[in-house]
Length: 132
Image 1 (cartoon, helix red, strand yellow):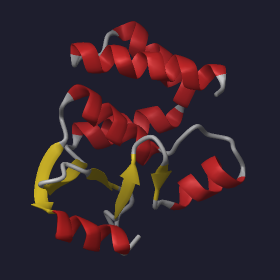
Image 2 (cartoon, rainbow, N blue to C red):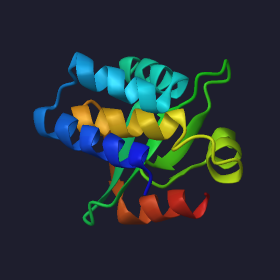
Image 3 (cartoon, rainbow, N blue to C red):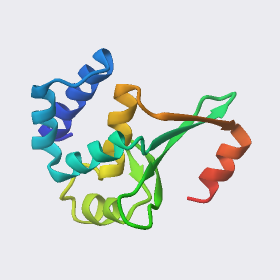
């Protein structure tokens, strides 16, 4: 794991424990993630992050609003995967980013407790995941 990843993980743990972000944490996250962090905060401010949870298992995935005119929604696991083009191009193929803006938005909203919570049956969640 890179030094940037370790610092980011420490920041997320602090934010999760306090459910708030101070100026130093904002600066650090912006330094690590750059423009993706700015874009992620806009998505969170617009309440564009849904956590879809299966019942009774409690397993979940995030559905995150895009910023384009089409207002596409992307499915993601905040720490590992997103269905957006940027994830595959910038994160996986080129290795230029630690994560995409949708993953950042999901992580930030989850840490702050600002996700729109959606409950579905485990069967509905499985069907949703099978389409990825």
